[in-house]
Image (cartoon, rainbow, N blue to C red; front, side):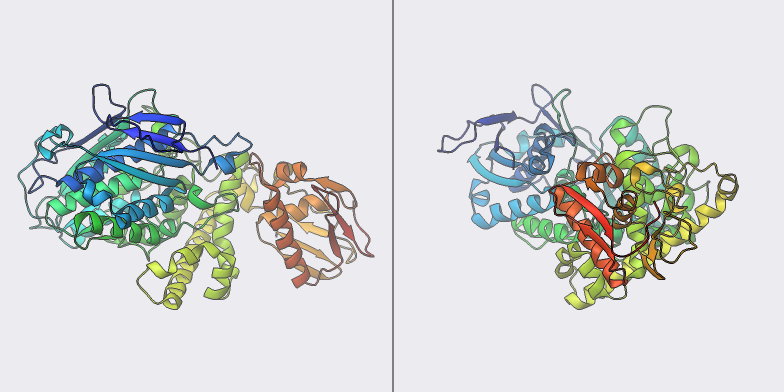
Length: 597
């Protein structure tokens, strides 16, 4: 854990209590001299009444947390202690209007609990009283919008595929009047959001009032940010969306996100904790709802209507409703800050881009719905290396692995992170486990369809052997390069006494017995060891072969080896012995077998 950081906000004096952290940062909201820029376009004309003092406090607290998230570094992936420094200790001292509310232990606990689950950091809060009044807050009144009207729902609108599906489902299919709340990260992104909003509004069901759109500007002054993880961004927008919903007379805020992304199970041992985003995780939504209910002093819900749908299923429904052409105007990439004028809006390398492209294929949609020119690098055949190569291999591999799991119990044992969500679905845990397993099986089926379609579309490149080995399709085809631990098969498949490592089928066999690993880290680890039978292989060589570009911890290597041993024993390949007696090394020995070298 990194050293604690004290963040003093809003011009308050630092606390003088013993044990105050020596590292002090100051944050203020405002265009003149402030580090945090915060404005809500068109809000004044949409809300029935001004936000209450407690609601203003909530928005400002969330803005300060969002700013601190970007000003206190997690260390960066090149640091040797990145795993420890990822989890920060942040202590905030903030002036508030309702100090009586925020000084209550259960309110502070709810605030801390919501943030700690979302960000994987530790938080402490102290508050001081301020005399600022709602009328003094100018950042809420920067632009006058349309007259106030009745709304059926308030929903967050990112401009991505899922939020489009939610907006179309509400306005064009069900005829509800939405108030959509968007983040304005950079101007060209907001321009896309506005264009998409106008297209949705034009397609609303006949007789339905036009939806409204609020753009929230929340960013730091130039040169202030030192980190860009932004795990607290959803907290800020839940706070803003919740306040807006309250002001238009609603007691619910909606996030539209497919259930796979919401659950967001780690695709590899390295993507753990808060590194796997928890924006719409069922537990995160429940904790946000508890906090908002306490601040609003009345019951308030935060819901995800798409929690039991895959993205491919949402796209099928969008197409059935006759609006799949709008998908081309959405942006799913997580690297929006890196977009440049004239370039495609999608990087083609991040997990969201991979998921989008494969979900489009699984849904049976074509280039008109998801233009190839929208990706700066081809998701399917673009060459990758390091962490990007590992990500795409594990994204598909983890999804396809689900097909070989027989029951919800086995699935939960294979994915212990799922247990964090079960009690928050509002269902008996056994029923929730069944539904989660079914959701992931349907996602796996979709990824299988996507892979089959991708292989069919690239048949000429496959026959001509021009698919880059270090690409998504190259990995699927089993043409793995040596750096990720996939050598050619060890020995011809003619002698039953020989050890055969088959990278095309992801199997290891000898003496008539076979162990199927799938495209997993365990297979890559065994494949690398099979290249050096009888010799000790250092952990660094295993990292380079199996986890390129990632400083995998010793525990990760040991756990992967333990899993590989268990699979081999279960398959009857007990003559394969992995000797780990030499520190930071493993050696593969084969009992009474002839080994092809």
